[in-house]
Image 1 (spheres, one colour):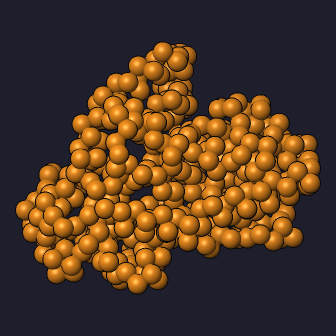
Image 2: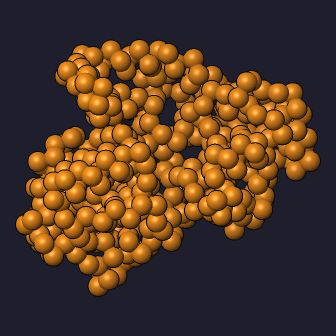
Image 3: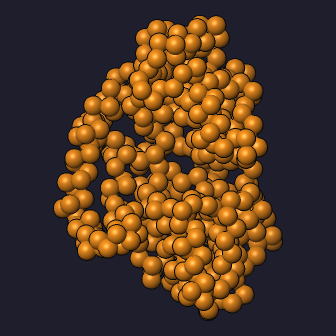
Length: 402
């Protein structure tokens, strides 16, 4: 088969969750004898600017192609013509639309499928659709407090308000996702746990919806517990979604009891400066803000991984931690958390966003090497359920179905 990924952004080494997953799948398909191409939904000028390719030294994949014109203001005829010629010249059999969340990107894929009806279209939804509204108060908390509007937080936490908000957006988004199901041969979710949410949005459970997890990255496969140190790791964007500030407050509660432990924070974002200032002002020690850094060695040495996200589609950083034999502590704030972490067995799931409970669970792990090692081994074993061979086989099976 000749397979083309229509990607949200280009495929480049060491950048972006969707891009990394695309690269893993592409390498697997190539090893199985299939030819793989990538077409970015951005022009090359947009790609270089958005990803800061010139300053970060990113190299695009050799089979990476770009649209000639931007999709920002509709679908130019030049893009349609380019895409049709590209599909015909390369005899593309499978088109994987990695932008299933985007109505514009998906609309472009529909147009091209109509021009070449023999192509089978797989549209992937790389995140949750409604989960962010469950935790809207925690996403908006910092901005509301900065605007002196913290009095609105109880409203945003009210179950009736959340119910109505979910219903409103389910209806607002329904047309897009019903069209996605109608125009695609398969719609791919990242987990069976996301099917109820998708059914809520569409209004029924479409028969062509399948669940295929994201694959584990083979570079993060560390089973040797002898390399572990008394280190805790947090990885992510320093923003309202990942809530680094919550982790800093959790660490504030435990660091004095465990002076021989260190916490490494990897990631950049607008919240980083404020978190550094908070730690300095409060005298919070033992926390190292590393900024944007290659994470492999940190995963190898970390004994515990902390995940404080407000919403998530799958949680690649959490999976990488499990592959690295880190015992995870995670807010039970997204549907697929339960698929990755079995509470009390392969890690701890904490009530969202209970800082006190989180600190207690973290302290228990820091205090007991036996518990840490048991959960580390369990999480490492669980990560094998998401190996590239397992996930790749599911993709091939889905592609072979008529």
